Length: 246
Image (cartoon, rainbow, N blue to C red; front, side, top):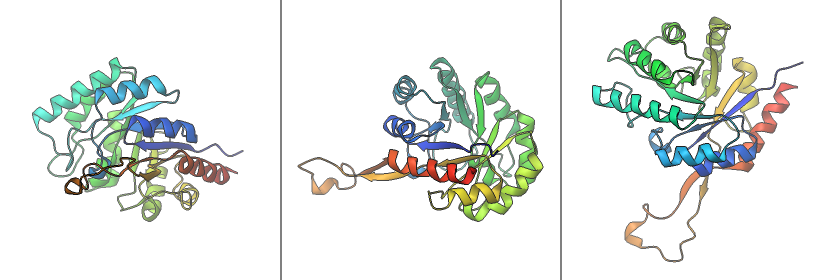
């Protein structure tokens, strides 16, 4: 019998996290600033999500957009955010840091893993920005992380499926590879089969339109539409993965 695929939803708000749970997600990755690749959410967002969710909650630890080469000040911020996640009862954190030569910053990442203690550890797509994915895989395994979110170094996991398959084969039982980037109900099952990844990651986002009856034309872009995860779209992803499991 096939093992059921795990579906993680990337959620840019507590509202998105609740929608993920309603749609049948197995786990939430919580963050803010989706348009900039995600940053650490506010403590209020984390607290409300933790109160509302029955499924595992992982929090992205990333102090700013841009690259993954961090200053001492940014490192201190990340370590404190991890501490706050532990105190608020989160199930895991999503971390990553690189050196200027695009290798895993082992010293900083070890500090983050130590700060996380018993929490689950996902290494995020900083992995895809490294210069050598095979070497980076060995490094992340050495850190003791539980999984790596990856598109196989490509724009999407669809294009990166062959690379992901080779990483899955190399990793064996040492770490889990989770495919993410560009996944939807039409391709997620195929990516699961081709990559060999048992965990899949998608945002399932949709546009939400403002209900404001008055909008200042001078502020268009500041006070109208936004995006969030959609429970119906997530349910479609869940059904597509369940079909792929048969």
